[in-house]
Picture 1 (spheres, one colour):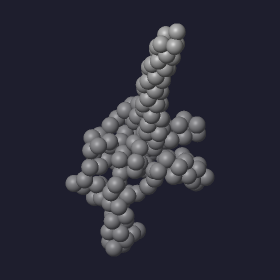
Picture 2 (cartoon, rainbow, N blue to C red):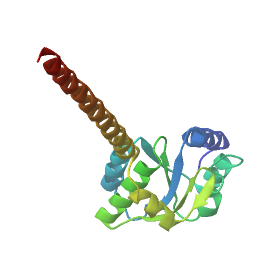
Picture 3 (cartoon, one colour):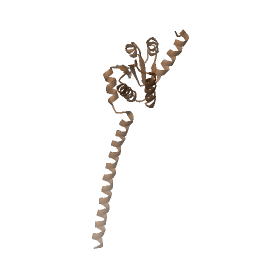
Picture 4 (spheres, rainbow, N blue to C red):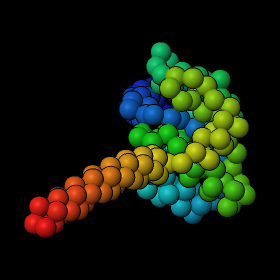
Length: 173
């Protein structure tokens, strides 16, 4: 059993864990082997997310008064928190895809922008395009607009050059 000092240390670590988070997903990792959990954590690292398992009472103390307070309602039974720090879509997508591939683990819900979200909303979040994909599509749209403007300007310059050439031919004749 952890001492009171160790529990305080864990609470402090959990508060740091929740500190700069964008999204928290609450899951039950029961049935996962150590190898599967390690594989899951490595996949989360690639999407700038982390997974933490802790006692529910310590989680509830750590989230009190913060943006992730709705986690208290989801912390029942074996609880793992998947925390995303930049793009809220990436950890949801990684979690949903991993659970589908190994056919283990369940998502209980999550917290996004201080609001509790259901399991279906987490799955819906996973279906959204990632931040990088959205930025790429925006840049593609801006690029095509700039190309269109450049094409119009080029055509106008070409027309002016053709007209100047015609005027020069008439004056010479």
